[in-house]
Image (cartoon, rainbow, N blue to C red; front, side, top):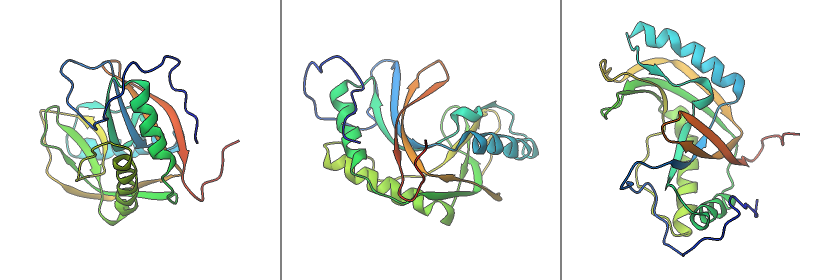
Amino acid sequence: MTQHDLFDDTPQQSRTPKLASKPTARPTYNWFFALQPSVNDSHRIYATTAELLAAHSVAGKRTPPERLHITLEMIGHDLDAEVLDLACHAADTVSFPAIDVSFNAAMTFSVPGGPFVLLGTDGLDDVRKLWFELSCALADHGFSPPRSYEPHMTLCYDPRHRLPRIAVEPIGFHAGEFVLMKSHVGLSKYEVVLTWRLAGSPTQS
């Protein structure tokens, strides 16, 4: 991919892009790269984890199937076309095989909102490697990605019931692509803007 044309307007000024900067006011959009299960896998994971949540009395607001994902990199908030184009050109340089993702643990993160997430050990090693490749590409294009990364999939938010890390039966999916996502803040809506196929994945017709 070499041409993106995410916006019709011309950027007003040049800037040095920064990753995951904290907005001064509530943003309208968040932009990030992610791995997303297929529609069938998303519904399977959603159904499979219902029993897990019930077994541990986690009863908060669930992430719907269409929003299940693994964040690879946050790009920022309310970005202009120039910064987004730089991020997309960085993603264009990434070459990585398709990934078989496997989670084998779950816990509540110690942050506001009580996100209950799936985690993994060896089954997420390739996700970590893809993150590293993408982070290096973004750094080469002027971004400042974070130096640590814990791949996870958020299942729900339950601030009243927090669970320590537990082992779970493996839950996984095949990732043949990574995507650029636009999150509409406050609307519970994710929009896939661009897609990059991973090597060895069949091209969709």
